Amino acid sequence: MTAGIDGSGNVTGMHIKVAGQSINATLAPQAIKNGKDERHLQGCYEKGPDAQLGYTFPTLLTEYVMKNTHVPVGPWRGGVNTNQNGIFMECFMDECAKAAGKDPVPFRRALMQSHPKHLGVLDAADKKAEWDKPLPSGTFRGVAQFMGYASYSACVAEVTVKNNVVKVTRLVFALNSGHVVNPYLTREQIEGSVAMALGAIFLPEISVENGRIKQQNLDTYPLLKLSATPRIERVLVPSFDFWGGVGEPTICVVGPAVANAVSAAI
Image (cartoon, rainbow, N blue to C red; front, side, top):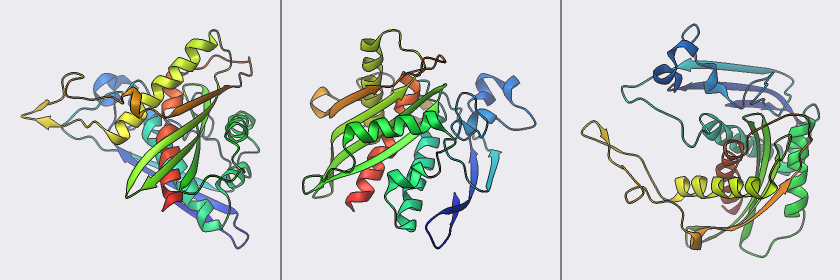
């Protein structure tokens, strides 16, 4: 990813280059068109509808090449490509904000005026987390927003870093899934996203041994334990004009929010 920033700290253009493996190459080859799998760009679509980019740049060039290896890939809790694309986009947005000398939240807001639903969840998470309120010494914040599976989500993470050990102490989520049928279950889905995302960041790995995946079950693929789970706060801001997902779109903002908080710490 490459961006242009002028003397006033405003983004003048964005260049996104994506290369990677395609899930559809093995699971749904009929979805491959002209050697490309558009699903790989989830969260970066200019027009959407289900995973639209939440920023408007004066100029934008997105390039994509499908590069498959001999090891097939599959979905991870259904989040599929929003999981990595959210990290790429939202961590880079923080890098741009730092280069522009601006706070990462208002920096994003300036680019989100044409995306009111994206902006709505960012503002809701910002308000709940009290972004402008000073933190205790040694605690740092990070933010991320993204869209996936027709829903809009944002997350603010608070972390401490001591002796090179990262501890996530608080996560604040805002979600607009259009309608909310069962708020209790919706909040539980968000909490499940946290367990999966933080577990993937700090604990498990998938390895190949003798041509097979080595980790076969939860005894060799450890998940996050309750004792290591941070305080989780959820804000539901449904706009009641569409039907979106919950478990998938919320998992993708955990990683970049935590990474951006760690970056603020160092």
